[in-house]
Amino acid sequence: MRTRLLPLLIVLMAAVLLALGFPLAVSVAAAQQQKVIVDRIDDTARFAALAQFVTDVPTGTRPADTVPDERQETLDRELASYYEVYGIRAGVFYRSLSSMANAPGDFLLPKTGEVRDAFNEALLSRRSHDPKQVWPWQRGRLVVASPVIRDGDVVAVVVTDSPTGSMRSRILRGWLTIGAGEIAAMLLAVGAALRLTGWVLRPVRILDATTHDIATGRLKSRVAAAGGPPELQRLARSFNEMADNVEDVLEQQRAFVADASHQLRNPLSALLLRIELLALELPEDNEEIASVRTEGKRLTQVLDDLLDLALAEHADADLRITDIGALTAERVAAWAPTAEAKGVRLVGGCPPTTAWADPVTLSSALDAVIDNAVKFTPEGESVEVTVASNGETSTIVVTDHGPGLTEDELARVGDRFWRSGRHQNIKGSGLGLSISKVLLAAGGGSLAYDHHEPHGLKVTVSVPRSGPTV
Image (tube, rainbow, N blue to C red; front, side):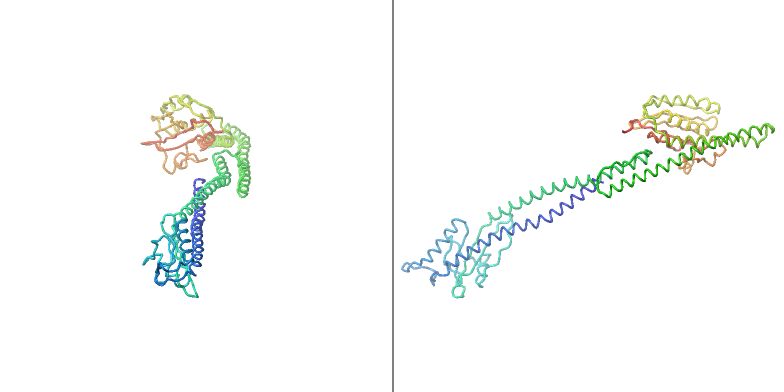
């Protein structure tokens, strides 16, 4: 969940930072340009004030015998100094397009372009509009024009044409500062997201692990206090309360089955004894008394199996490293006489291999599986028991050549009290495999069933080779 939640938070935070960063970068660029424009407006206003009182020379030239105009000289000197210090071209031009003063000397009005547009706009007795924004990757220039007004009329226009290299450098430095801030903010946001997701999801992970433990039979597992949001803390407390209630209900159910099985054995034993006494009064070949005796013994077996099942659901597995091959060979040898008496060959291939298992539980499971295989295998057929292992599990496969099971029966085999309708007359309670399944599951093992071609059933007992996790 963290791998899905964390990228989502990072994308959202990046989007927010970019949404803030782009307008801020545009604002920085606009502020830098506006600062330059304001400076140019001040400069053109000062030059316009100097040019306001310069004596007009109709021809636009100054003959040698003309008396020098001190204001004209001051204007020329100021423009020359301005260009020399700042590198900004500036000029004062009459309405006739002739030059009153300019620096450098080759700065004249072009026929078209930004300078001419600004000049024409200032002739309308207003300052030229602000030039369009210049970005760091552009090499544009900033042109500002202000009118020179005398007696209410525009007699000339002051024009400045500024380079933008320094301004673009300042914009770029401002953007780099913003970028560094955005990166720092993003790193902080990622760190905060990591802490936040860890804080929120840690209780969820613990709850998930505890749920898995309970689902696999470890009913004593509970959610430990792990902080997190108050809602998850309340969920953890509610989960623990639910687990306590479920465990109590299961314990009551197990105790009921165990007590019922135990309490019924005494009256059943007394009943069987009375049946035996009655049998003494009847002929030895009486079919009814034989049937009653058989059903009584079957009921006794069912009660014993119920008690074993109740104890199995409550017992903890005593796991240890076990030689699966040797244990299987021992059980095959124990069942060989029974198989031989029925006319069935019991064959075992049991190479040495180790796994973690409860020897008593595994022996009981093998007894139940081999018993079923021998019971349902016809005379003259065989039952094979093979042991194998891989990196993770060791398996004991028991295959027979009996009638096998249908697909529907395979789905139900191992259920409590379930028996195939075709095998109701064969001795059994339908609890042997269920008990084995519960006992194996407590130690991480399992039972699996499949078809054995051309006919028969294959039962696989699996136990883990790795030790239990603490």
